[in-house]
Image 1: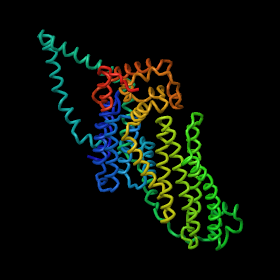
Image 2 (image 1 turned 180 degrees about the horizontal axis):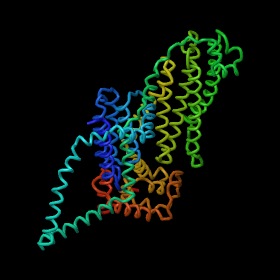
Image 3 (image 1 turned 90 degrees about the vertical axis):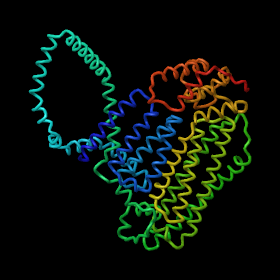
Image 4 (image 1 turned 30 degrees about the vertical axis):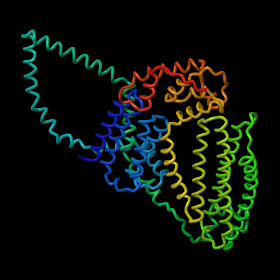
Length: 525
């Protein structure tokens, strides 16, 4: 069978499977079925992918993501499942090292899906259908079918029992087609087209290998380049440097002058950041005292904003000075020391923001943004480490993007292994005597928290005001806390009746069982 024909058959089968298992269902156990079909298809179409080193780790990450969908069934786990599936498929179809270029190839597959689809349709020749002998079979069947039709009519008119049987068969066929067309609605047909698009984007690769070739044309290590002075004068970088350095950007001493400018710049920036860090060490690290009048939200946000600005500026400046031959300049020792000092000071800023976030959680409880700050700090810290490695080992900017891209995937998969809504609810309720409990925020969390709230129904009678900015934003209801909780329980149980076994997951099964148990209100105050 030709490859084009096989791909069209797989796309059709995948679209039908997508339509059957996902229509009016949650992404849960059905994800396992669709995932098995997609992975089998891509590995059958591209068997050489098993030899790629990154494939084993990607498959492991994807399996973890699939398990989290079945266990936690959170939005984060579903996002991670989708991202890792795309990466597995793209790394199967193309040669890639960086997740950023792989993401570009995945986007290209979907953008150019229509062209790829019809290109495969054109490759399927009508001769392949003729080889099946369909026309020949039809010619031999015409006369027997006519004879059978004549005798069918004779028997139906002459035999009452046969006539009743034919009538019953007609009614049965009529009911079948009636139900078929009611099942095959326009909404269902649109969903089928969505299945074609999703499956086709996964199984069909675009004709161009542009992003793959760009990926492998990049290098991790910097190479020293012999600059042509005439070409250098015509470059945009020379124009930029000339604006600030004038004639010092020209000639054979340009590299030494640039090194001097870099040392002065990093010295000034280090002194500025040293002053800021000294303030944080005194007042945040060792001198923090919580008072009710302190706005902890602003306290954290101002530190995070400072961190973002500082890190972006740090990386931009360091990439500018260590972009090329200055890495190989023999007298750049103090420039490197200045860069290392600034990286270290930015790491101190990370610790300061971490402490601010810790104080926020300690006194106000867990919330989405406070947890998000922790993951952001992890990415920042990894960014600083890779910038240090880049300068010390003379790496390229491509190295930075590639390593940090993979770290982001690892962080995403790790984060999906925790049911954060449940973790927030447990922590906040367990610390309700020391942390202001925002009940409205708790009621906006996922259904996994409903059994926990039911065991602590005393919190629903609390008169405490909403103190969480996320709670006030997410709580959009005119009902009281108690009424909303009962409404959510009712809605959950009614929705579960609409789903089949395809939507089964551990979380929903747990919540359903817990809500059906007799209520045991916690007496813990």
